[in-house]
Image 1 (cartoon, rainbow, N blue to C red):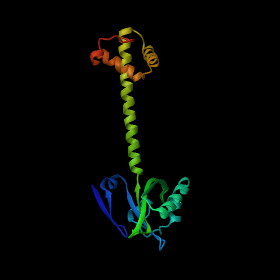
Image 2 (tube, helix red, strand yellow):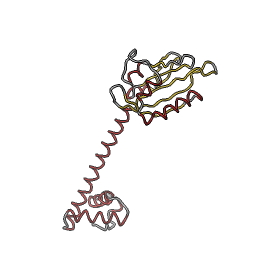
Image 3 (tube, rainbow, N blue to C red):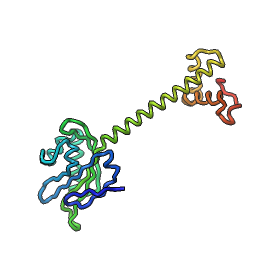
Length: 211
């Protein structure tokens, strides 16, 4: 689904609804004839301002862009102004409170018939989305690690109970088999548990080097 966002000179711009759910979005337009940047309220807010507090300009925007990104942004603007688009770039900025934002700029010509008269763009703040994705990946990694550790501990217990060795020796045996077979310790442990609990299907009756 999409929403229509009205902006002077652009008419109705269709933007997917899910963009607005997690990612603040702003619009910008620039006409070659007057050299004035026009920002939507959403773009002001991305930079930490309200309409009327600042006058948008290239110098003003550049001051917020991370120094390492400034040459790329200038080259991007020069390219879009000269050749149009659509064209996109990822940029890191600091808002007025020095908070970093990860932005996606997508820009193209404003046309009067077939004649380019300016540039318009959509700016999407991906910061929250990126943080959410990273948190989810970290959570999933921790959960996967915990599951892996649980299987290894269970396999160690099985080896200890069947062979009379201690925990360190049980792990050493699995580690050695891991090296010998070029398989992860977790995979070795999983197979030991499955064979011991009868969940290995038609492999259950085949010998295992540690059982």
